[in-house]
Length: 177
Image: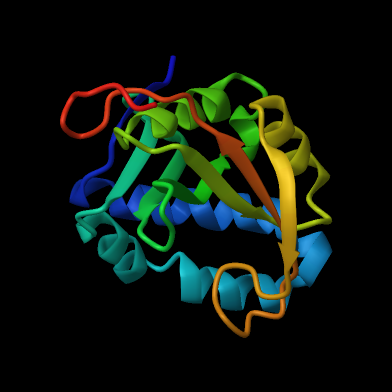
């Protein structure tokens, strides 16, 4: 059984391995092996994971059964608009552990990690039907499209999906309206 917990420095190697396996399984048929390896090296290298772990406005979660990682999720709070928004940068489940509820557990925990957040957004490759179906299943809807998923100049198109979150206690403990 997998339990969701906050990732730490000791998890970096296992997270990098999980991301590499998951990316190869998911994206090689979409982008080709060379592009996938380039993106793994750029986006999922151990030093990049350490940067994410160190961000004070971020939350890095893993699903751990004590012997291996079944999945991971990384999100930050966005300060780009008046509505407090969670940006889900990554949510990946090991191919051998998909369809066991790990993704839903990680997503549910991310939704609660940022008190006062009113919206959650994620970028999804339009050719990744499994991810689109997952996000629809957790209540997200399409909100737009962009040309550069992940980083400027990536050349990877994405669907922007969002979910309005219920008003709950903000950082002061008061219930939002």
